[in-house]
Image 1 (spheres, rainbow over the protein chains, first blue to last red):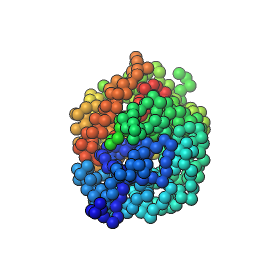
Image 2 (cartoon, rainbow over the protein chains, first blue to last red):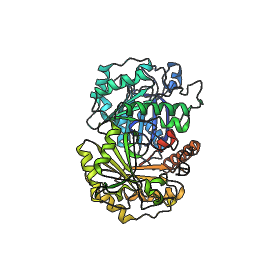
Image 3 (spheres, chains in turn yellow, blue):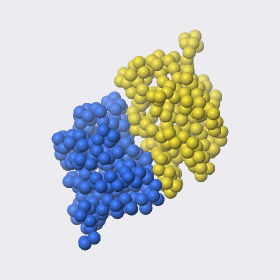
Length: 245
Length: 245
């Protein structure tokens, strides 16, 4: 493609405005910018279309200015929270996007598993670090995680969001969170049956999701782990795994 | 009752720990202290058992120390967030409870409609002001609301939480929120069929609640009202109106 600029970002989708469905900014109106490509392959990944190389042809290389033009079109030109997600957005060169977006009045939140630090993390307004628990099948690399923490700036709000699928994940989360008492902590029950590229319209079993949430609340309160904030994926509860909301 | 101390607080129920289901502190583990008695009678009130005088006999007059003893029993002795709710907790003399609770390491959040200010508001860690919209049948008194705002201290986090049942409520909320741009803003869809003392086990129509939430998200994003954070009553979605969670 001749028109692609030298520095481009692999984009899986840009959608919104909708509300952020999880974590520290739950309920905040936002446009999502989802990058394509990931260094992980979690067993329960709910965005395989932005992860697996077989979808690479669907990822559009876009310049920062083109991404922001789309964000502004969706937002009606008004500044808002832009949520950078993936895949792993930390694999992309996002510094120009952050600089230009801030000039236009936008704020930026990013979620990453904490496997790759980038100097531009300090330009983020909010950084959610979400290292993956044992049930994901992925290994935790403490050194890389701490490099991500160190890369966040003094004005970047950092929070820790841990997905919990089972008892082993829960024990892992307790031990990990204890090592980072300074970080606001969010626990999120795992969605056991996320939509997949093959079943994009898959209906959520909300009874099952609610049961998992109640289980997690009981664990946390039973263990007097009052620092842990427990939140569901609200978008899954209210939009049933649908894409683009 | 001979044993009742001179300064006592009318208590409808003390329960938890569970998670806060709504507003700024959604997901935070907390013990709820619900006071009995209210100066309002909202059309869709979901806690009539703490509001209507006919339930007065169920409200226990308790001293601050007795309330904290029960909080500590429930929390297993560990300090946590205590949520003061009602009824209207601002009608009660809560200064001794706040002073003693802080000594024990607890933090305090309170929700009130903003109809009565108290000098002890400055002792609260978090104050949610939730003036009632037109659909409640109650009138908004700006002077009293602003007295509540003024009563909060410099270290009290104040947020504005507005319940929205319909278009008229939404328009009212927009106008009101515009007058207080400094306040973090939370919009909450109204639960059209809350449990009542007569139907305490009433099942929630979660489809209807989700539809109301989606409607509110669409309104907010359609109007580019990006300051407004939209959140459901999570406890209603996951525990179906049940009491004591």
